[in-house]
Length: 311
Image 1 (cartoon, rainbow, N blue to C red):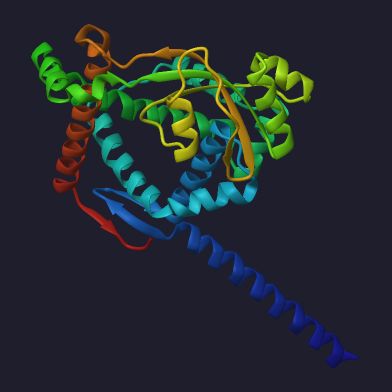
Image 2: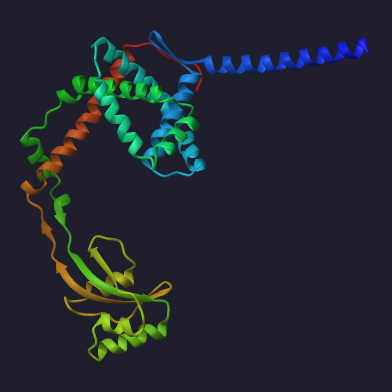
């Protein structure tokens, strides 16, 4: 009896030791340093929290199934570690510049995130799944706002686009600003050759496409297509051989027969500079912004100590 008691105590101690070892191992894994950025470290827990935050953001922006969401996060996992390192560098610059973020901005951003969910319960459930509290999300928002502000100061505010740059881009890319010919059509499609021939016969007798289609209980569809769009050769030939007001013969393409009625032709034309100058300005600004941001981040990294220990 005494020996059995000792054996039971021994088993309990062994199990307890195993559980303790597992908990300690998990805690160690969570606290394990995976990267060093100057005097800051990135732990496994911080990286896992960052992945969870990205899951939360992705889930609020687009409807993913749980598996699709996880596949998306895993596919960009290495990029996200680099992003976290960049964020550390940017935040360090924000702290050096004593960037302050108003609480009202945090509250407004939290309200935006909440609105992307169907209900407060759904929002709270998503937080719980990712292991976050509202305070965690607010801190992440504060960091993102600080990074945005320092980028605004150090990068965005330094960019200018002159009128001559816009004009030069327009004439250097003149062909990009041509609108191709566009054709607006109504059409029917059917997998039945006999029905297609009946509609074709009705058109020849003077019926319009809508009346002929109605007799066969077919739905009328609309289509706008440009001369630069890729279409099956037989469809493109039928559409672009029509004159305004004309109706095509039945055209076979893959599993269907089509009949097209051309409503309107918008001829090709060249967009003038005033029409497109705002779009060109935005394009050039974004291009310069990306180039300058990349250069700024490269400079920060070059002047900092960055060591990826584990990824």
